[in-house]
Amino acid sequence: MNKSKTTLCAFSATALSLWAAYGYAQDDDTQIVTANRFAQPVSSVLASTSVVTREEIDQWQSKNLLEVLRRLPGVDVAQNGGIGQSASMYVRGSEARHTLILVDGVPFAKPGITGVADFNQIPVSIIQRVEFIRGPRSAVYGADAIGGVVNVITQNPNNQNTLTAGFGSKGYQEYSGSVNQNVTDQTRLTIAGSYQATNGYNVQPDSTSPVDRDRDGWRNKAFWAGVDHQFNEEFSGFFRGYGYAANSDYDAGYAGGQDEQQIYNHSFDTGLRFNKDDYSSQLIASYQKYKIYNYVSTDGRYADSNSLDDMEQRNLQWGNTLAIAHGMVSAGLDWQQQKLTSVGQYLTPRDQDSYKQDNTGAYLTAQQQFGTVTLEGSARGDDNEDFGRHGTWQTAAGWEFIPGYKASLSYGTGFQAPTLGQLYGLKRYGISSNPDLAPEKSKQWEAALEGLTGPVNWRVAAYHNKVSNLITYASDPVTFEGGYYNEKAVTLKGIEATADFDTSFIHHQITLGYLDARRDSDGETLARRAREQAKYQLGLTVYDFDIDVIYQYYGKRYDNNTNEYSSVQRRLPSYSTVDLAVSYPVTSQLTVRGRIANLFDKDYETAYGYPTPGTEYYLSASYSF
Image (cartoon, rainbow, N blue to C red; front, side, top):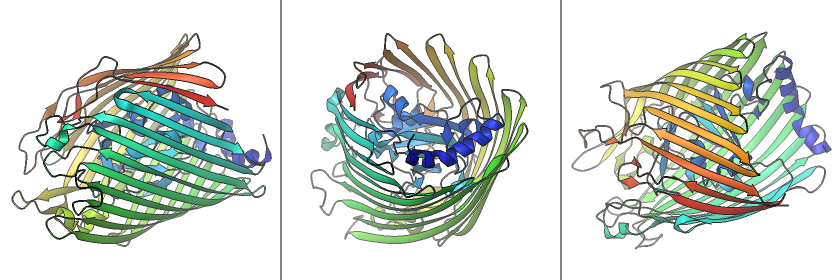
């Protein structure tokens, strides 16, 4: 290992050795940083956690981040069609906006009024690793982390160059390439680019609008570049930038409606790291520019009938970590500034809204082990220029009562800040401002039991999440003008069980979930959350063929909740799918892959009126050098 790699890994190795010395690294030594903002083995994390590597993404042959996350415990997805179409992800029944999306530890910009991050557009080719924490993490990261945190890591630590090309059903094609090399002992360079496209299909065949009778395709072009440099034994720095342009066709559902979307996203991060003995510090500055055009395809992107959300987001993060006794302590400051300009036409003339919001947060997290007992705690304070100060905290305890068996109990609070559009209104939608709009709040506890019984590594968790001040939209049925306000409270409770084991040459992964998500006011079940779900994945190698099979089942659910426009909930039936993926290494450098999605061509919908694409086929080849 060269000097650069040795220094960069030194602090992680220190953290791992601390945990290994006291027995918690025996099950899984995989390092994770998302849970508490310091490096620790997955086996020491008290929260429900999943980690997906680049090798697994390639084995599964996932075409976007949504397909990766859908395999994981506690995740339910509703999508308006196929690849590239809008989608919502519900983690343990929480709202889609209640999951914080990070890219390399930096919050992903959310320019839309709903507060949902459009992570479905992040190119899968630049993803090297995904860390997924279920449960509240607002005490660590601040707003949005009520249901969980997804950290998309794009940095590739390996010296490897790759070229990939593929095609598939409905005109699907993909091309990507990357260069990851140490150009000197102290400097590492990474360059990557990709292109994905599909002709798609008619995602809303029952629409009465003539322009909705075409195929709804998607195209995505992406570029990523970064450089890491080791200045000396203690200091290192980096600069990276990535961007993508995504174009999606969708159905408006009525004549003259917007039916095409163009996204431009450019992000730049730079940082300085310091590592010495048991202490490390990191300062990161980030800038994101996110533009979304929605327009009528027959009018063109720049016609008066278009709309534009133009957002700038700046982040500063200063984090410090210290190894103390048999654990770690982390503390730091976060600053974020968001600027949003929203332009569009509601009636006449065109309207423009401009907003700015600053938020400053300070956090402290710690984890210590005392024999067979692990204690964990976090506290955070946020000061927002619009809704003032807000504090959150969480605590957890784990006890290895028998070697190989651990019980844990946790409690945490969380909050979700209103979006700029919800707070100040949007003229182009006829949405009024509400300066009294308060953040959503949550209180959640979780009890878990895990162990290694024979060859089976298993975990069972029960959770109860109470969310109050839920932000709701209401409008006048005649004028259609409305606004956002705090009204509802909901309770989310459920059980989640996971297991993985090997039998001969076959690896098994099983996830079972039960969810009861209801409005407190009337006990009505929340829309688009299946009560039951089951996921069973098989992985095996036969004569050098790597085979992956996944079965997914989702129970019955409702497509909507009752409101001023609908007095009855519409039920969606249960469904199950099977996907098959096969890889074969032709040489040590060339690998060919094939995948069949929805092997048995099941007809189902995750959003009413939007059928899924049916059976799809994909073929690709990757060359590494």
